[in-house]
Amino acid sequence: MSPSSTATVDDTVVMTYDEPSGWRQRLAPWRPALVAAFGSWLAANVAYVVASVYTWRVTKTPAPGLPDIGNTWHHQDATFYTQIAERGYHANPDSVAFYPLYPITVRVVDWVLPGRALIAAFAVTTVCAYLLLVVMFRLVETEFDTRVAGRSIAFLAAFPTAFFLFGAYNESMFVLLCVASLYAARRSNFWLAGAFAGLAGGTRLFGLLLAVPVAWEYLRQRDGKLGRIRWDVLSFGLMPLGLIAYMIYCKVSWGNWLAFVDAQKHWDRQYTWPGHALWDGMKAIGGMPWLNEWHTLTLFEVAATLFAIVLTVLGFVGPWKFRKDQYYLLLATVLPLLLTNCTIVGNNRWLMSAPRFVLEYTAIFIVLARIGKSPAFEKVYIAAGYMLQALMLATFLLDVTFVA
Image (cartoon, rainbow, N blue to C red; front, side):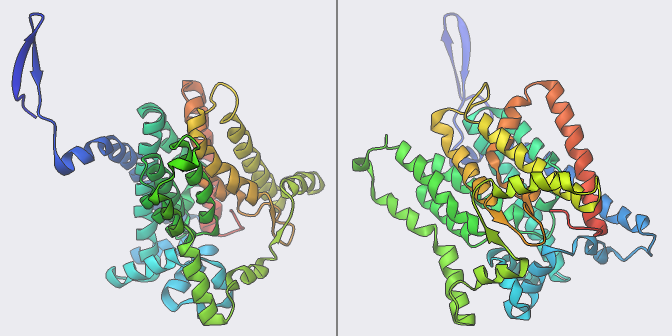
């Protein structure tokens, strides 16, 4: 950009510049986010491709062709999503437990990309993962500063289960929609916040929980005065539309509005009081053979849950607490964390998938980023995070046991 004019102030020559207009002006605040996110995103993709290729050396099986390398990621929930994308819900009645937005997107992309639905699933999650890092950076930068924003996405990428953001799961799409809804609400664009929340509700049931933090922010911006509510309050009507659309589909297809709830019986999912699942998991650790398969898994599930709880509390009290006007971020973490701890899965799986659900608790990674101002803490977290992620990724790719 060249100077448009000069002026003299107190014998000092001052150059003035024309402000960029149009899309350049709107894009300018996003450039740091696009650059910072690209580094973490590219490094993760390269690491995961290398890990996928190397898995075949570990198993000592013949190396597959390039299109088949992704098969090491094609198990557990990923098989449900690709099956839905390719053959719909009727191929497996249990698959109705998985919400439709992600497999629908995979199916649409599959019409464009060559290969199977698995390739399209990777394409969707990889794009969503990048956009998630971009939007999260921008949200945190707006609330704090660039350094905290950079550390927050770096700490998210280093979390032990972060590879689920890049696999054939709906994780990155769901977290992206949640963060985008919160960012839009903070920017007072509640129609956009409602639309993103509605899409999140079509991706995961917990998308409905966004109504609480967005409503909190809506009222805060109006000083809590009901008299200042305007017509944009109708935007909250968008939030349940994703779930409602799926309920209508279930009614038409199976004659049951809540078929997706009944399908949870396949996993023997039960609901209990908050903290019950965590307490039972902690008690079970002491009664299991030390470091066998289920002991290790339960130990990590309990540790991940306690990790999230402690960091959430630190968002309310202590040197890293959030300002009161930032409580909407904490609410977006407290509610799903609370409900996750009200769920018990059969076969003694008290906190099933809890380490993966931690990826959805955006506020804890912001708290971590603020603690990470200490170089020593940052180095320890990054090193420990990637070490555990490598172990969990190897377990997942080899499919030797359930991971998260």
